[in-house]
Image (cartoon, rainbow, N blue to C red; front, side, top):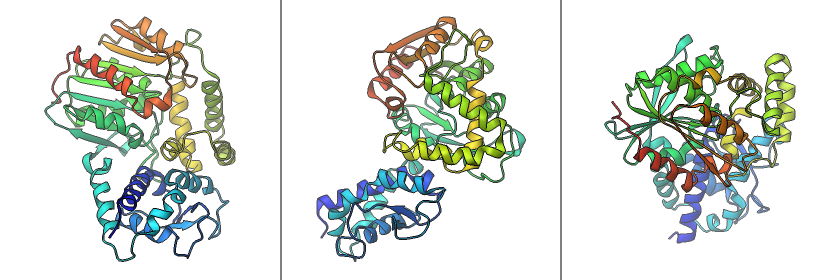
Length: 397
């Protein structure tokens, strides 16, 4: 018999492992995790049950940090990121009470997997220019009004999962992942400029035959969304831009974060042979800078030197993209959202974008930043719902 606390521990561990899936699948196995001071090999060791959960989810096995060689190697920091996210030490006591022959482990893990993003979203491979492809995540009623998300460049779809879950109720929702950052990492040789990223967005709209779309742009994805809306007025009927990372010259000042990140990316793009050494420094500097619940997703683009370089190329292009001319071509109703306290993307950029658009509604919240954005802050989602309710959005097809 497995008690309720132990069943909940299995569910918590399953959900944490699934949230880490994009990172775990790129790390060398086994993934090394801390056990919170609980000795391995003893009666209270949580790893045997944890590995049964991982196996049930189709994920690589776990090992205790320090049990093998390489804990301080290049990807050791990311094993630590996964370890912090699953927080195995806190679950150890409940997991240790589960009998070795209990069927509850696989059953509970299966229930969590059935509710996971990968189960309720369809993944569609969309061919794009250069012989490459991008993955679109699609959910909801195909005949319902369509909302397409242009998420933060280079980030896994799971980072925007709260948006996908919310929008899939009563709508058709689509998100595509950035070119060259997922799938066959070794085989990608495509372009990384903004034109190519916009072409990917347009390819997704065409492949899914979407019309009357509301296009959502998050962070740097707002630049791609704006360019796509200007190029596709017949498919995109309305637009919203959330905490956008905008370049409008002197009219849109940068935060320290924007300036520092852009400087780093420009250095990597200019000297790709030095990207590996830069990557090592960046990995060490990232420790403790991102909340544990989001770190496995936000830090995904930094997993390897090659991934880091591609991320720099994609985002450097976005951050240098002056939207001045594009904004004159956007006639669709547009919601522009920022906050007075955003120290990641300067709020003045959003204010200036809204001022230059033909049909903009500007919302400047008193507080909020990119963390609340990607956690799917209820107030933000309510703001979007209100805008959609008064904006004509056509059917998904």
